[in-house]
Image (tube, rainbow, N blue to C red; front, side, top):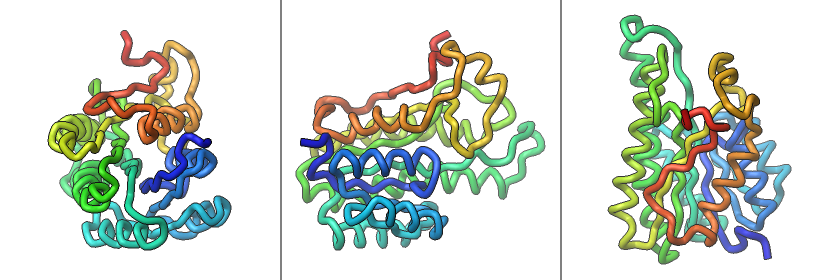
Length: 240
């Protein structure tokens, strides 16, 4: 039996990068997956390639009404949701604190932080129907250590870490687990920092699938006593 047989999982930001890798692996492992993204053309293409166990829904993760549409369409297609991967995110403009404007700061907050709150909140009613479930929030090593010249991104990723722990405490009574995953440098379309790659003890960039397998474990029934924890995939970057 595949590791995710019987699971219905929503993955945000799944049209490309890590989200796409998660979706491909999850379908391969037997899950029914709802891919969401603002990029309709790419998202629909991925879902079509994955076949009948994949559904694409266009989704602005910062829009609360869009969240309810995603949940409704997921349930209509596959039934109650058992897993949510809050993967969508942006880096935002890089630069000194003193030069950051409010509009750019708030956009990063909306996509990286508000969406995680709204996703967790909106999925609960569906997840309660399954008598348990698993939520994985994608943070970053920037949610564990500071990142110069990227204060908005760092702020959101630290917030995701804290929200994950709080939600884990609140939702344990429903048998819903909540964990955060903290990738380091990954070969996606998000801008890479050469100095971070150099400082990574394993000396290379990770592939998205190396994160996907950890998330698969957290979504599966292999991790039923794991909640409120941080899982780091950074090649040793934060071990120093």
